[in-house]
Image 1: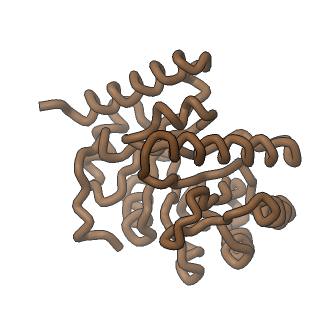
Image 2: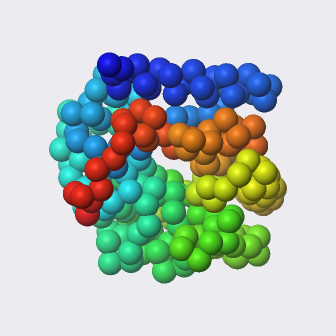
Length: 234
């Protein structure tokens, strides 16, 4: 039976192979271990294997994990990667290091206002709904992306780092189209702001394609932690 450490190593090997194939280096691509619905013991197993970046999708669950591990493991970098209701924005502002799913001005303003002054600015990515699916959150066009970016960069407690997307789960041709569009949007954002360095796209099933199209952060969950139990989400 493979361990979390084994699967983490395999995921990193996939990233390295994909980077090599695309004439990139593996250290250009960060692995974000998506630990949603998984117990703290699984996070600690990944931590023991060298993993430091973890992604959570559910506000309450994520808060509990951050609080449980903050004192003993202060070097863990916590990323919120799920949809966020405005009435729960304070939890993300106070407990997380990154927020990947910014898609509207109200959330941006609340996150900045609620970010404690003693903490570094919250790193944020603008979520792009690149597939245009009505079931997904995110901005759908370049003009809206640039307008929101302008609002983010004007706020003192936020730091705009780049873009995030969840593509459609269709065939490879469709994925290539969507990842290609994301790469173009990312380059456009970089032309406007010097500090843009993060393109958060690619998951367990499509990380190789994402790396080919310039991803700098892949979000890997099931390939590391196994199948998820959604009965306890919050």
